[in-house]
Image (cartoon, rainbow, N blue to C red; front, side):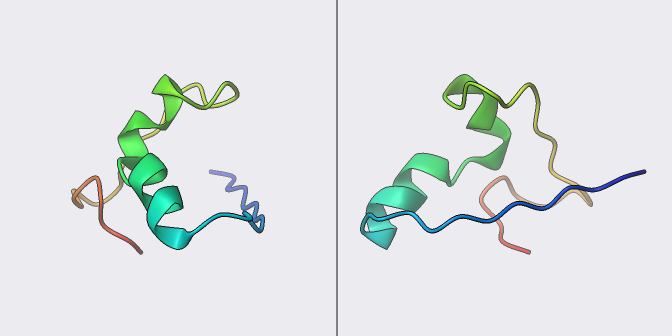
Length: 49
């Protein structure tokens, strides 16, 4: 399976950014280009890594 990685610098306080994107499975509810999101390996939706 192919994987795509993209990174950006967001000019905002880290607390505000994480409050918005913490629920990785919820990205499609607010990101217009995100069709679906799935957490792998049974990790928590807020887990990093």
